[in-house]
Image 1: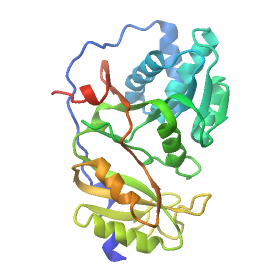
Image 2 (image 1 turned 180 degrees about the vertical axis):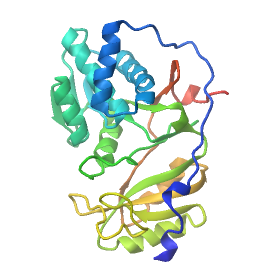
Image 3 (image 1 turned 30 degrees about the vertical axis):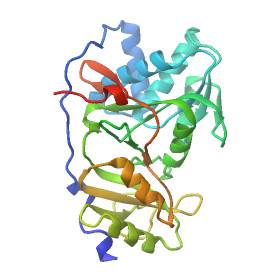
Image 4 (image 1 turned 60 degrees about the horizontal axis):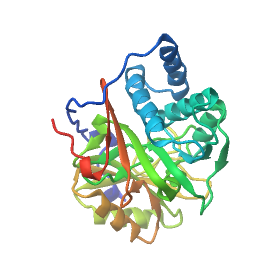
Length: 299
């Protein structure tokens, strides 16, 4: 199993893109709105330095895409939590009505409950008009995204629910910061695998991406070695989570997804590709809304 992983997760460098100035600017906020930002920032547990930019992106996501009477998929993560709280604010003010939220995780359900949003849990075949969720990384030019790098408070990975919800939505938006909108993504792609032969599956994945990625089993808490330590993460379905950590830029995230889909022991993975979607990208003082036709950010 030594071949499965040979370096730490922290060895993967991060890429950052510079964002050009565009016409969508932050407008001055009233004291009441600034106070509201502080409240939802605490709820989202995001870093103080990021929460204002994320709030602008979350707010624009709701204002631009959500209409009264919609069924809205509620994603997970700091930006999604801010969007859920702002959606609740608009419902209380009466500027939106008749919204039903579809939750993707325990976290999004908790946020929706605090925001006073009527919710239902996702079921196969549920019609969703629009969905939003955080993206851990978005591939410039294709809008393929990675979700599921984050751990939920319970340790249960939420990307299966998020992915099912996202793929069922008629319209989808990923909310992220500009340093996560990249050409040539590196870092982890989470992969859910069957527990019975997980080592064989891990070695097959390692061989598939030999020289480009390392495979680590995710621990239930803290940090552990490549095998996940004495207490690896086991989902309620009995599956393990492998982090396939790319140490070189991924040339095509969609191809990674296709290759993973063909491995027998793989249950699911955190790549969403091949779906028309939008990226709501936050940066200092501005927010961009991008699709595949306008997806390149110039420096």
